Amino acid sequence: MLETRNLDKRFGAIHVTRDVSLKLEKGERRVILGPNGAGKTTLFNQLVGELSSDSGSIHLDGEDVTGLSVAKRARRGLSRSYQKNTLFDGLTIAENLGLAASVAQGHATSLLRDSLSRSEVRETVAEVAAQVDLAPVLDALVSEVSYGIRRQLEVGVALATRPKVILMDEPTSGVGPEMAHGFHKMLNDLPRDLTLLIIEHDMDLAFDVADTITVLNYGEVVFDGLPEAARNSAMLKEIYLGSWEDA
Figure 1 (cartoon, rainbow, N blue to C red):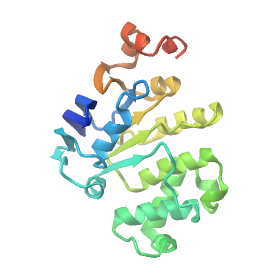
Figure 2: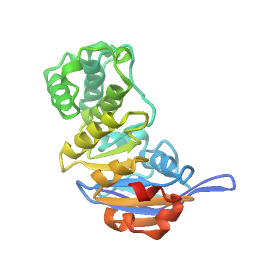
Figure 3: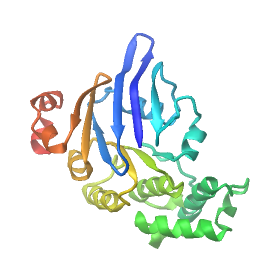
Figure 4: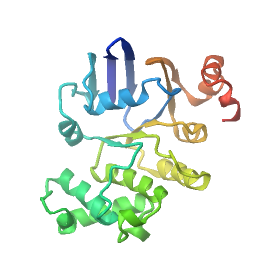
């Protein structure tokens, strides 16, 4: 469903991603781990088209999308949620979801609050809100809800575009243990035909959600395999300076 072949990116003398080759099957949940500066977010920026690669290629559902813009990749089914919120604070949760659905369905207008005027958009909003546990707060302004709910909404906005693949950049960043536990359940309950690629620092979530684990270090893939093999890897324990012992 999503494949990279020998992706490279340099910033001057700094080699940020090195020969990164990954292949995700349809419905796979893969978590990318790695210390700060490993190249994880740079890789995501390359995948969605926000950053061009120096070499290598990116394939989505069998199509080479390396040369396509962010918008064209999104229309082909590649969606992303960010480490920092990218929401419309002055709109309600329903309107944020509706705007994402409207764009994906080709109904977007210049009036943001018109996003819920179509029945098919409202149906998508209701379905997505149920998936990410936002149905009780659909009428709340984004500016008035908690940080945790905003994180849920980020995932919901990505889902509302009806993607084939969602890239999530640290979805539990900044939330407490209770909210993180809720994210575990929410991600596990998403449709199994949806492919997920997740950057995560929370080891509990990584091992709870992942079908496979990929580890980047200095821009290179140093591990790619099953979660249990990752747990038992002496090399990865060394990279994380023992933090895996408590995972």
